[in-house]
Image 1: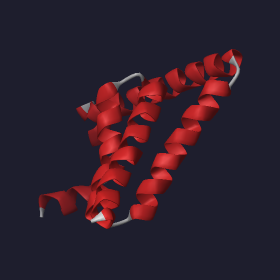
Image 2: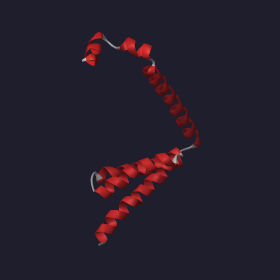
Image 3: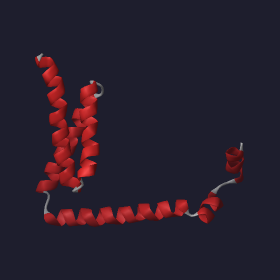
Image 4: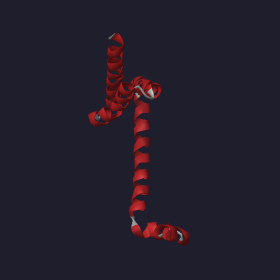
Length: 115
């Protein structure tokens, strides 16, 4: 009986730790729920438990490191993340622009698509 309780409670504890760590890092409870469901489900299913525990530990350690990081470092990382997101958005917009997308497709690739 104890074995079943441990198999049920341990994934819940890991999911709670992961949820609060991700919530602290992102400020989004939705993202926290999605990410914390990974160790919860993998733990309950009994597959890839090492991955689930490692992921929960990595997120927790990341949250602890982010807590003790200096304020200047947090501002620098925030600016870099914003710049990176802007570059990704521009690249995605380029991919959605049909004129630019059609110019990059080679004739050999067009033949593959039409088959």
